[in-house]
Image: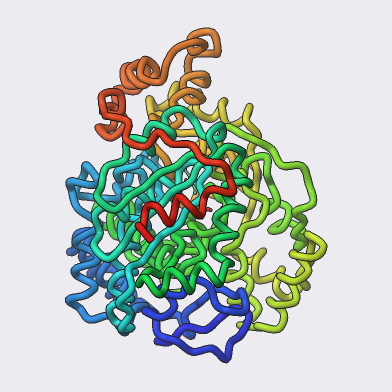
Amino acid sequence: MQYQSTRNSGISISSAEAIKKGLSDEGGLFVPDSIPALTLDEIEMLKTMNYRGRAEYILSKYLTDFTKEELEHCVNSAYTKEKFETDNIAPCYKLNDNTYFLELWHGPTCAFKDMALQILPHLLTTSMKKTNEHDEVVILVATSGDTGKAALEGFKDVSGTRIIVFYPDNGVSEIQKLQMVTQEGNNVNVCAVRGNFDDAQNGVKRIFTDNEYKDFLAQNHFKLSSANSINWGRLVPQIVYYFSVYADMLCAGEINLGDKINIVVPTGNFGNILASYYAYCMGLPVNRFICASNENNVLTEFINTGVYNKNRQFHTTISPSMDILISSNLERFLYHISDRDDKLISDIMQKLKNDGIYEIESGMMNKIKAKFSAGCSDDEETMTAIKECYEEYGYVMDTHTAVAKSVYDKYVKETGDTTKTVIASTASPFKFNQSVLIALNGNAKVAGKDEFTLLSELSEKSGMKIPASLGELKSKPRIFESVCEKDEMIDIVSDFLQV
Ligand SMILES: *Cc1c(COP(=O)(O)O)cnc(C)c1O
């Protein structure tokens, strides 16, 4: 299988090349040149495998230039019981006869980004070797919270890589900051930047586009790379868990082979829901996809009207990992439903860049409408969803998962659809403990309490154990205390690499 670009179908490169490059030169995203199919018999066979076996099986359909040994190495390095606190890796929780949560947050940073970022470093270093690249990979990340920590945990101590994370000194939560400044590993560096997220992001972009500096690094055998969600190596591991949950539901007798399910995904960059769409195109029986947004509801409007308009107020919400106005992975989806029309995608993306708005024609809209529903939930509705779910079932959701549940409840009210439904649960409630406890106990009982008190209170209320990685933050030494100005970021990189 070869990979082409969404803005140039003529490109044809191996999966290792696509993972190494990340983004195509003309700005397009890499996609497979055909979608592999799984028969129902193959899906049934997944029942007999554990998560690692399922991952190896699905990945082998896409990464056809990787050997069995290489895939085994990547999968076994990523999805271990030690890192995920459960051998199931992505367990399914049955809420009632129609509703199931696919818990994607048992990894080291308590959010679903671990599902991809635990394996990406191994896919990347293997891709480097396969393409005879001997430079060391240097990952640069600007983060507003979740991605930076997940990337640090993924890349720490992976030989042949180094990672530097920049975060805005006043733009992340206390827990997120603690998670980063206490990071362990012999190849990691973390630095706060004076300013906001855009300052950190622009600083990283400037380094990435500084050709002189990149040449200088190349002379010293370093190659810059990013860990963001446009890389195919981050998307492809996400396809696995949709097959895995289906296999788990078969095992538990919740569905019969061939039964269709609904999939609800709390969406930001459109990566997670796109992975479920790939699974469907490969043969996973899906009735409908439900795309859930918070108040930044660009995608709700797009799926309902065909107009994508990012010219709107940006809202800071209690589900911050979905506070996004440009969903970059939507480009891959549009490429597929336009039957790989690279010219159209280039035009659309140019319009988005120039005017912040584009519209798609009815042929594509009909394809979307046939399979997708979309809705949004504001902070108040999201809080109510957390409270009601706890009161009715004793199950505590995080704020992102609650957006999905709230949108799903509205969908059921409108449609009466009783299809068994899997909701992607994307973060541990402990990670967003403050908002979750306000939803459960009210503002007055939360105000003024520190993070660790809140963790204990949430543990009592939910009956769940505090994830070890969060509980131990209190006693961990702070390793990275430095703060830099935004024009000093390049010096931080040079110092770290000792060049
Ligand atoms: C990143 C993230 C999302 C959004 O996922 P996309 O793939 O960007 O749509 C949702 N919830 C949490 C907790 C996240 O970290």
